[in-house]
Image (cartoon, rainbow, N blue to C red; front, side):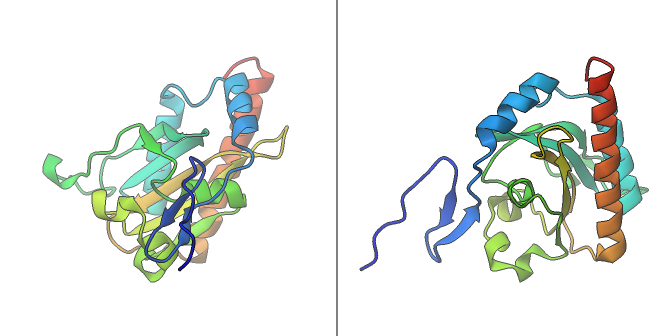
Length: 198
């Protein structure tokens, strides 16, 4: 009989297959300090909401976020949940999306730990990701995210990401787009810090 898998606030496991669903984040404490220094992760920022809206339009996604991650949660400082661009959804057709999620929800914690973009055109094709609670609770079926790499520390501060409730063929063009937009936002953050405030 195998020993039980220990619970940790940094990790969550699928008890049926013992897959590590949320990766261990060894930079969490340092990231929190840096986010506090920058004044990020505790309040929505109108400019980031606008960035998220543009990100959704460019990628054709119904939902997009500018997401900062601390030790226990994710905070969407930028959020667009307006539905598919050009399509007006009825209120009951739009999943409820708040500004916060726990670290074990969604895929951005993987992007932050790996410091690499992640593209899931159909999350159900990947057992490691298909078991995430956002699939059943929110109906997420596809995801694409890129890290926001801090110019000073080299840490990933968070991500920009898009999600869809349908499968979505993001392709190489989508990957190139989200990586480019992530760099644009990092450049903007750097400029804002240099000028004395985010």
